[in-house]
Length: 75
Image (cartoon, rainbow, N blue to C red):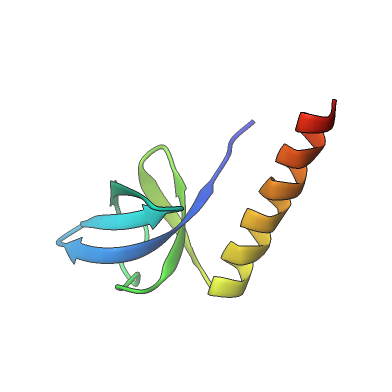
């Protein structure tokens, strides 16, 4: 199974972007999403941005993860 993580781009230097993932700052490669710009949300897999998404989609993914996490905590 593959998992893509949403993150917000805060800086770009060439094909390397700095992203914020829930307060954690990481560097990723944006070669596969050259249209990505500062302020965009992207899905990240294996250190690469694989798709630009809108803020609403990113929030929906975070909410789904929260529900799943809470469900696991009750088991």
